[in-house]
Length: 221
Length: 213
Image (cartoon, helix red, strand yellow):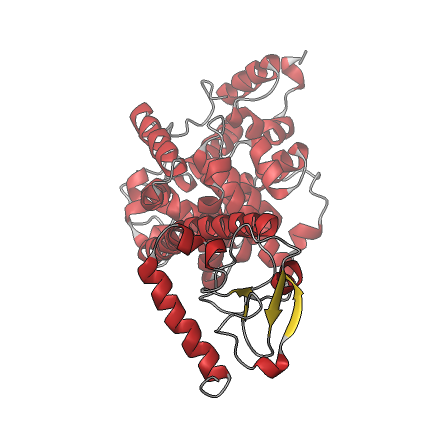
């Protein structure tokens, strides 16, 4: 999937994978006390997945914990052909969606959400930017601004973006987790990415990244 | 097949997400590569979108509330304890209980094959080899049956005669003295036990009949 011009995602190192497989096998054999060690690398991802759907810290934490316990209860059903992180995130998404349905949370959809998602989204900013260094994320206010930009997306775009680009599920896994078609995932993902790009471009104008060492007159991509 | 000249900016924007996924027709991708080399606007869109994916895909963007990991660890530990506790309870109780049930069941089956009705005294012994049609004597409120004329028959005014089989069916047991030859303990020679039992039966019958006759 990752080609020359594709975004390179961080692969899990082999040693870590081996270690994870060993932990899974031991927990499956009954060494339950090792389960937290197994989920610890993914605990923030679990929370983020729940929060992306529920948009409420208390609910997200509750659902995240429930999802982890559900994974614990069903660990013997986990098969090695799947990634453990994917399995865990899918359980979390499912739990969060069930919670949302159960509580009949009324989510006010924005104008964009009512528009035909098949319609093209045209980028608005074409300034000559260069890459934002990842060091920018060391600054809490930068992370906060990025989180706010993400939160401003309509739910259906935000959920797809979080699962694909943050949780690293693939397109099919994202579709399965949300119960939508692959085509819908692709369409929503395109719009989410382009909208976020424009929001960050606007953020640049507002000085989000003003303390970063960029060349004068250039935006960071 | 995609004609390079057909790839305009709108088409590139439409396909840019798939392009970044590494998906799509190779011919289209080649056409887009060519387009990016010559179109600064689309190149900006490409780099900006790539930047979005890279930044949001960074682990540092995954923030959880303070103490979330600690609370999660505690919750898992509680769950592990409960699970272990459940198994411990099962393993501590289930196995012995199952064994007892099996033993009790086995005894019940054995009794159903060999034993008669419930005995009237916990100290009574059912006897062995008693001829079923042997005529014996029982009295009201007593627990044993006797050979007629036995010196240990109490409450003689209530005496009645019946077969040993009927007496046993009614829950009577053989007298330790006059029916001694049929008693298992007597046969095995435990005279001390027999003597103790004698004394006990005397006491029981004496109690039941106001000190005996």
